Image (cartoon, one colour):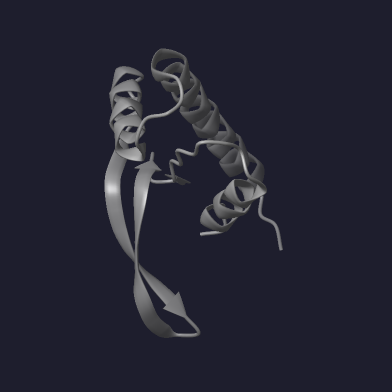
Length: 107
């Protein structure tokens, strides 16, 4: 069941993700490959602050499965209280990276 506000919400999320991608591209261009995830995370925070984009770093939230609390997840970044960003640093591209991103985006 859709609501009238869904197109506006999707447009807002799209605008946020464009900002995030722009910041990530800047980080990649400046630092290049081969560093640790924490380094890229810190650089992303610098970019987001510079872009005036609000975020929370290393935000923890409970994982609930069928009504039972089964653990805790710590997101690298939650941007504008709407988009979870999980940063990955890999030596080479592997399809499992896409799967990992897809799972993270389903939250």
